[in-house]
Image 1 (cartoon, helix red, strand yellow):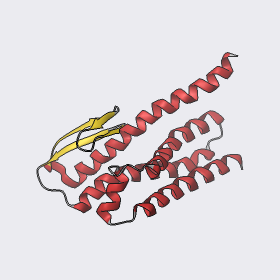
Image 2 (tube, rainbow, N blue to C red):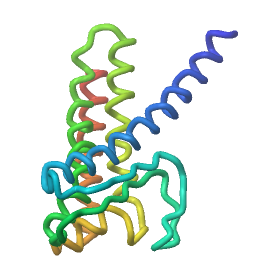
Image 3 (cartoon, one colour):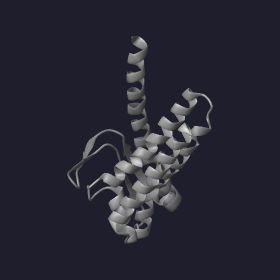
Length: 170
C-alpha cells in the first residue's frame, strides 16, 4: 500500500522541485546572456525566485530578474537576453531524446523527468498570452510574428517529447 502511495507522491514532489530548478535556470540564462553581452557594464542585478507582482506592468510572475546597465541596451541585445532561456529549454528538450539510452528504468525516468520538465517550460512559454513575457519581447525585438515563435517552440518541444517517448517503447 505504501509503495503505491510513493509512486504517486514522489513524482509530484520531484516535479515541484524541478519546476523551481527550471525557474532558476531560466533566470540564470538571462543573467548569463547579460554578462556575455555587457560584462562590466552590468552594474547590478536581482533575481527573485518566488511569485511576485511586477510593479511596472502590474502582472504576477513566478520569477524575474531586474538589472541595471551602465550603457543603453539595443533592441537586438534585449532580444538576445530575453531569448536566452529558450535556448536552454530547447537544449533540454533535445537532451530528453537521450533518455532511451539508459538501460535501467530508474535512470531513464529520472533523466526524462529532469529534461522533460525543461521542455515543458518551453511549451508553457508558447502558451502564454502575457504581452510582457520573454517570448513577446523576442518577437518584438527581432520583428518575428509571435504566432510563428509560439508554433516553432511547440513543434520543437512536441517533436522531442514524442520521439523521446517513442524511443523508450521501441
